[in-house]
Image (cartoon, rainbow, N blue to C red; front, side):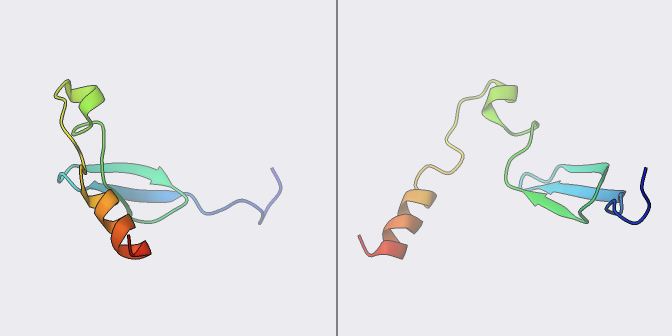
Length: 65
């Protein structure tokens, strides 16, 4: 491997909006995600709307619709 061309690979923390914290290694420091395998409907088997109206409302507000 060539020296001084690879990014620094350190331990990091991934934090989900549901409160789950995962320790792993990455080239980025602290990572924040909105949804993880613990709260995602595909993995939990519970069908629910993650952000039912929030995205649509933000879009309408942003573009004045």
